[in-house]
Amino acid sequence: MNFTQSILDNIDRLVGTLKPEEELQEVLKRKFTKKEYKVFVAIESGESFEDLEKIMKDDKKRIEELYKNACKKLNQELFKKELVYIN
Image (cartoon, rainbow, N blue to C red; front, side, top):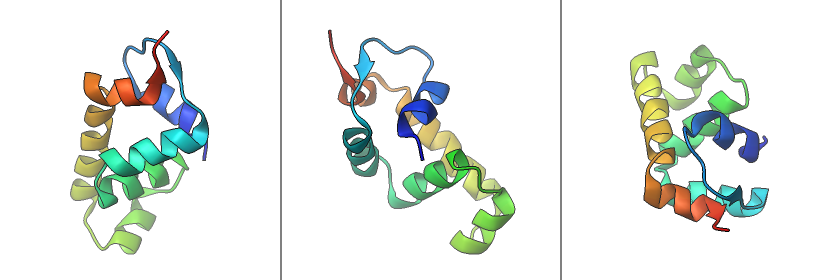
């Protein structure tokens, strides 16, 4: 999975340049809950909601809520500061 592209697709405004893939993955793992991380990675990798429902044993509404929360967290200023090198 390409974390850089997924983050760029979901962030509204970004100031600075993103860190390398490994560091981005560490930040996401640290800042997201386990389920948010799992859902974010799966959806950005192209998995369907039906597959996620079976894997996580949650309904579609809950999975959409987790993904929406993950995207909201990505757009918080404190979160963004950890994702970028400030020039």
